[in-house]
Amino acid sequence: MPKYFFNTRIGNELIVDPEGEDLRNPDRAWEVARQMILEVLKSEGTQPVLLEAVIEVTDVEGEVVLEFPFTEALLDVPDKSATRH
Image (cartoon, rainbow, N blue to C red; front, side):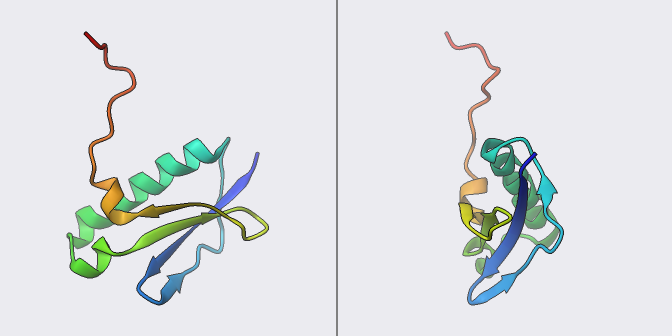
């Protein structure tokens, strides 16, 4: 299973995830990043500096798999299990 690292960039500062997490695919990494952001915003509030922060998800080689802006996590994501009429 691939390992993903969830590094947080706040301004010019990069907070590195030294452990990473084994996940099945980049879609799951996206879900984990979103949940992490929502938890941070819940505990720290929507401070302007956090609203400009980004989680940079990288693989074991250090290549960026995805960048997830904190503001994007606040957008409503449609429930894929919901029935459409």
